[in-house]
Length: 366
Image (cartoon, rainbow, N blue to C red; front, side):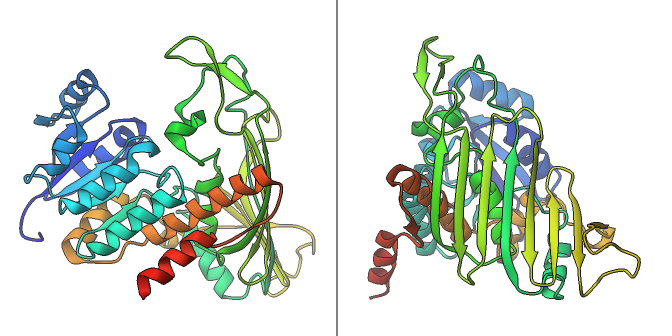
């Protein structure tokens, strides 16, 4: 593969494909986008014209089976992620799949199992863009003892994206298309997993303040399938307690960020502004107030940037491991998201990893 052009097929041509993946792939030498398939023939042809892609397919199955395609980039809604991913691996294709990974944890495990059956093929999930810039800086501060022993974490994403009752039903609010994925829960949990241990217990409540919306396809009101307000409590492997607060109906006081509280200090990553603030007894300036947070600059040489498409191509050519984001991480955040939904539905705590998948994995090892 390192000696020839890497031929990419696109399935789905939505916003992120146009904004990030197509430009990112085109910026790489020795990479060519050779085929595309979108939801409808007319949108497929439009994408082909827009991006100058030579070949079009009316269904994704034919594109996946094409021997002249080496790798698939999946930009569809989550309901198709699992079947396309599994089929692509079986056809010998590398896979970069858009987040969220799947509809539910069961699908995520099927995708991961298919990837493990084909270890020579690259399996990558489009990562959460939150926190990439300051990833190295946060890691260094934690490893250097800035926080001391981690005790509590607050994760929040508050906005007004769903505050208008007149806004039409989005595919993200259709459980048949998006599954258990709700608001920014999964994408921010993925970000948090880069810096802290995985959760072992979840307790949650969810609510839809606007329970129905107009379906743009039919013009009639339909029940929304996902909440517009989520609160969850979690316990991590090391005993750290985490509070998650997600809302799409907050008109003021909005923001997105993660606060890490430890025995020695606190770090606040403002994810919307990509800025880090903190205070620590071990690193306090002599003149600083004991209660004030100081901005911690992210040096240019330590700042990370979006290079997902480059990482995908490099992994195919050199066998380098995927850092952002591998399928094991995707399984973890899909189990967490489903655990939140189960807890909210049952009104009780849910243990992680989910019991049925622990049994499956144990059986696989026998």
